[in-house]
Each structure stands twice: as C-alpha cells, then as structure tokens.
Length: 91
Image (cartoon, rainbow, N blue to C red):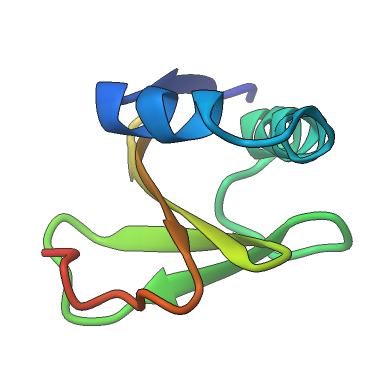
C-alpha cells in the first residue's frame, strides 16, 4: 500500500536553503517513505521517537533528521533538523 507524503511549510523553508546535492538525497529518501514509513532499511534509517503524541518517527539523512508522523495512509513531514540541535523542541 503506497503512502502519500505531505510536507509542512516549516520543512519546505528549511529544505529550500539546503545545497542541491542534499536536496536530491532527501527527495530519494522521501520516495522510500512512500513505500513503507515504518521499517528501517538501507537508505532509510527510521526510528520511533519515544514519549511523543501522536507517535513520531525520525528519518536520518547524514547529519540531518526528518521528523514525521503517520496518519492512516499519509506520512506528514513536520520538520527538518540538524543532528546537533537534538529533539528537545519536538512535542
């Protein structure tokens, strides 16, 4: 069952500021999320973030993290953060 990936304005603003090589890598990884946003695999390092409601996931791409949650057949991308910032602002 393919999933629909939706991105927030916050993600879009941060994404536009990235170098094109990283943008291409992120686009490829988001295509992998369409197939299965639950399972970690090569080119798609996924982990569940504990103590979040609704249950959120993080997708690792180099030193960046994509934060998202799954609602039925939709993957909603919330934010794009650098690894150094951490997850403290995610609720």
